Structures are given as structure tokens and as C-alpha cells.
Image (cartoon, rainbow, N blue to C red; front, side, top):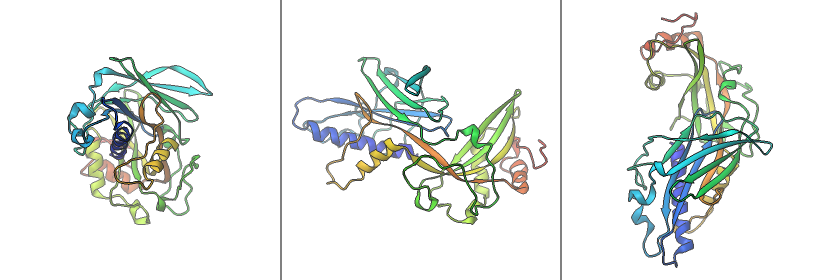
Length: 329
């Protein structure tokens, strides 16, 4: 949801900038706006592509609800992700595949969306390049971004956790220019981590909850509640062939990388209401490709009674989580 919000801001910025630059031209000009984020603590990476036009003789806001003025058909694009270490390409480019991801109604038409995703694992200490190719025109846009943070999803399962957040050291600090004080950050993610066991394989899984009103700034907020278990039940599939084991709950801060920070800084400059400043790190196109990171400032260890609540409670009893004795039912 937060990524969608940033995207709308980005599209609006691109729309008005295009208008400002080309107001006196006599022809329409099509611009592709690309928004992509990589996050090594996400199991899936998304890219969204939108179309905007300069409007020499009309108000561009008249066209935001015209679907083919703001959205492309997915089939005309190919999207690739390349991984670099020390400036050298590692392996083959990873292709994104189209996904049906519905956007909430708003300023722009949501009749269709041009969204792609990949489950490529993002690795620390690497740089990534995104390539977006229009198959109809042959035009290619690209952008690069380093990875923010230093802990993968799998590594986060091995942390030592605590029952109470009292001067307890969280994960090692990332190389980040902004504040890591939870009282100064307004974007939180509460992540429930668990293992799945199926066919002799172990899978590292999680469910994220983004609180809207709860600020998570006091000790009482680390206590779980009935509605939370209901939320987990709705987001974890019931499968009698899968065994599960709860690992813990991570309280995380959503940190934008420098590319996204730069855009936010530029966008938030005081300007008149008819002009939006421009920032883009995409070559031969417009938009932002950047890194994001979920920094865990506190890892909650689950008490035995909590583990039993997950295993035997009315919401998750059919999801086959083990109890505090390590038994499944």
C-alpha cells in the first residue's frame, strides 16, 4: 500500500513536469514512468510501468481517468533484473513476469495495471540494474541501485530474540543516513516469521502487517491480540500436508534507500501548487528504481502460552502450527 502511495506521487510529479517543459509544443509526447523497488527482506520484488503524455493544449488532469492515457498493456514490455558485484555482471539477467495486481481507486484509472514481479533473492553488497524494454518500439529504459541493509530474510530467522524491549540490541545497524530511532520513523511493519515443512524441505515464511494507528512506541504494544491472530489466519493458507512452526515477531522500520530519499526530498520542496519538481534516476525514461530495507529494531520471542495460542487457538487451529512441546495436531 505504501509503495502504491509513492507511485501515485511519482506519476503526478512526472505528469506536471512534462506539462511544464512542453507546454508550447504542438505535439503530444508519450513518456514511460517506471517505479521499481528492491528489498532483501522481501521475497518478491515489483515493478510498475505507467504511461503519461504531455498535453500542449489541455489540462492533463482531464486524462488521468482515461485508462490508455495512463496505463500500458503488459504484453508490450519485457523487464529484466541484473545483479552486479564489483562492477561485474553475475549470472544471467532475471526476467520479471506480469502479475494481476489491482490498484485502489484514486486520481489515476485503475481499469488495468502494468505490473511485473520476480522472486529473485536480493543479495547484500550488490548493485542491481533494471531494464525495461518496449517490444513494440525497441526502446529501453534502465536504472541502477545499490542494496540497502545487510540481513536477508533467511538470516533474520537466526537472531536471538527477547520477551521485552528494554535496551535490547536489535540487528546490526545498516549504513543509513536517516534516523533509526523508532520514535522518529512513521512507517512500521510487524512481521510474523514461521517455518513450513513439506516434502522433506524447510521453507522460511512470513506475514507482514502494516499498522495504521498503532505507533508501537511503548512496551504494551509488543503484546499480541485476538484480531492479529485472525489476520494471520486470513493470510496463511490452510493445507493439511504442511506442518508449521512459529519463530517470532519482528518489529521493523521501513527505510528508503538514497534514490527514494532523493525523490522525497525533491518532491517535498516548497513550490507553487502548479509545479512539481522533478527527480528521476532512470536513463531513457522517467521514474525511480531504488532500494528499500526493513530494519528490525526489536525481535520478539514468543512465550510458551503464545505458541500454544497459535497452535490451539480458534483462529489458527487448522493451520498445523506446532505447540510449545513441539507437537503437531
